[in-house]
View 1: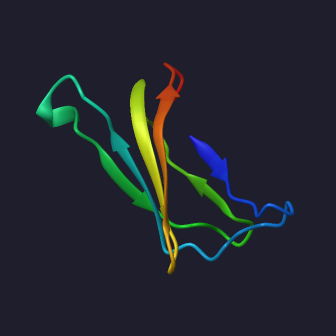
View 2: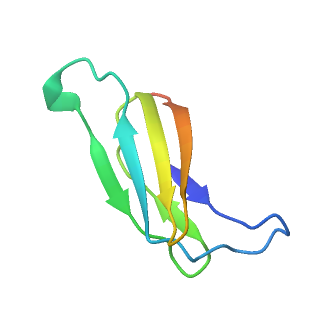
Length: 77
């Protein structure tokens, strides 16, 4: 999964402490995934080789937490 963060004005947003991806209701405890990454200079993040399923995405800045409650990842991750 690749993502890009931008401001309301369309500028690259890079002032992020971390980006966290968590599996929602994984089929087994072994499949409970929590991955963390940061942004590159262009405000991009990447999570590689994800299993198909539903994930929550959290973006942490110094001032706030932005939560996307459900992202569906297909078979091609």
